[in-house]
Length: 126
Length: 107
Image 1 (cartoon, rainbow over the protein chains, first blue to last red):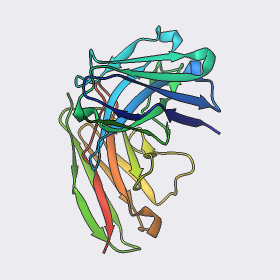
Image 2: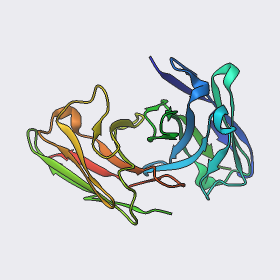
Image 3: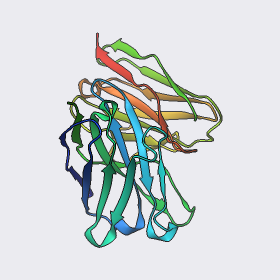
Image 4: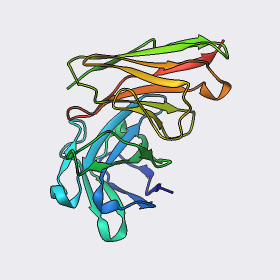
């Protein structure tokens, strides 16, 4: 069974930093792309960013709202994904989900996110 | 960025009703669209990918259609467990973008 478990959320002051983790199991983590998606209280879903796999040089993509402040990384030896969040703003308050985006070697692309973790809550407030 | 516009934003329906939700993309995205269901306090669950392919384990009362800029999610006979919020997602171009959501409530 594919499982994703986020951790690291909490309360942080504006301007502060936080590092989220996503521990995975049940699939070959190194083969797939991984995304972060967030949801502010009472709001819709917002894509945060992506980590590609080793075959695609672990390159990343980010939403404009977090580019330059957030960094996505991964450790394939630990089957884990990370989100380093710096210069946090009150508008970053949200539940953060990690999600798998399975990579098709035959087509060289992904087809959206299929499995999601349960989320971890980040609150940015003074 | 591609804007995804869902309609309606909410609807009230009864068990057994046929429900249709529409998602419109601001530019063509081929069939690079998924549909997700989210219940309060839970993570989203994928229902449909590639606009019309049913995710494994999802009941066949859910179906998707469309290509280009107009997409539809249909629930053929609404069940009690289907009351939730539904989102479309385009994955044709970065940044990925979601529709604003459609809340399906009990009439």
